[in-house]
Length: 81
Image (cartoon, rainbow, N blue to C red; front, side, top):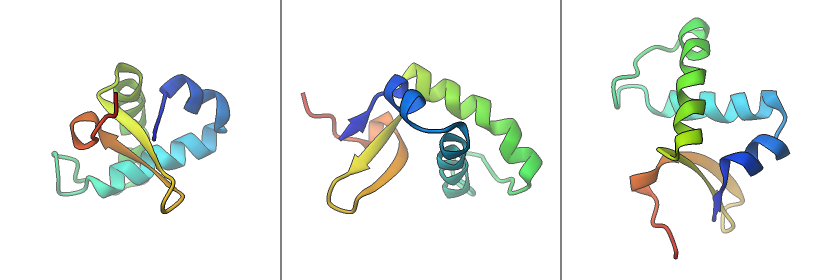
């Protein structure tokens, strides 16, 4: 199930949303050009991730099966119509 950015923003605390975005960035190390693990680099990248979520380039997917949530590129997610 996909979670809309507006719903995500209103239901998660700022630290929880930032944690989710940082987890996404850490999974991207070595992929897609993100290769920094420093706190400073992560903090600088957060606004870019949030903007991509707002634009729909990245989406938040909740897995009912594993009860987990993850940020993914919209092309990686099969959207049910």
